[in-house]
Length: 305
Image (cartoon, rainbow, N blue to C red; front, side):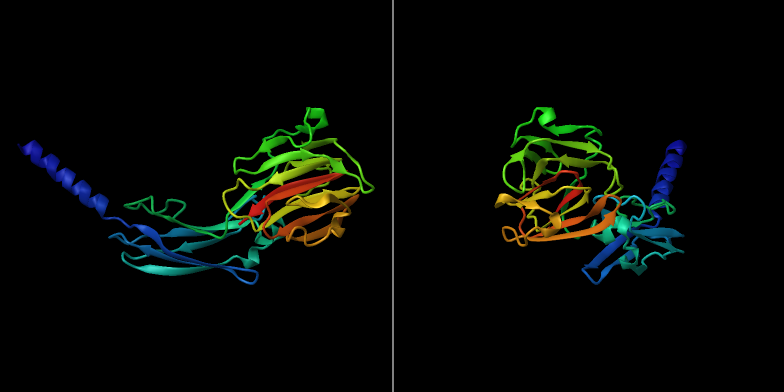
């Protein structure tokens, strides 16, 4: 009987001790994200019944694709938070814009994490995160996978109109004939590889007298913008949007017409050894993009809501 009383006392004491702990949460998260301001404000509260000691708060700008060296993150070191108390923190991401993160254009979501290092023992460790979606985004970045050296087109036994890749996010990639400026065309190859001049992120795809078509109808959201990065080391390019123009535009990418099928076309470029690199941005209701070149590489083809 005495043993049972002791065990009961230990159990009650254990429950009381477990319940007497801080509990840190993100109560509110507001985000302002436009051409001028890129800010987030979060209310951090301790809803537990014990004061919290030192902890950290991270504001993460989640990216797709992830920038290799300048991932946007704002950190706070909080010296402590009393039980029942709350604080408001502001994060300004604008100073973190950098060419490596495409001037924050890759950010699609803001995530706030409280105590990411586990510095505070809490009664509930599963309520420390809050997210704010800026807009949905789906990309193809050419891996790996697939491995470097993967071929599409004639050497791979493909024929025009073949689907050669279906990304997990629903983007389909097809191969089509490349059209000459004077009429007619050819069906050569595309190869996944590291580019001869650095651009993009990791592996890219080289189109050599072949067009790639990207179908965004399976991404699960209405696409209002498509962006890609390119490297042009010679020759001319093809460009088509939603099946227009017919025949496809053939010429210098920078001279492509705008709009095409009601979609605005913007091309930027900067010189690099042997050619130029830059971005193509399509703004409007984009269902399909067809693009290719002669000595032409592309990477990070992204559809945005």
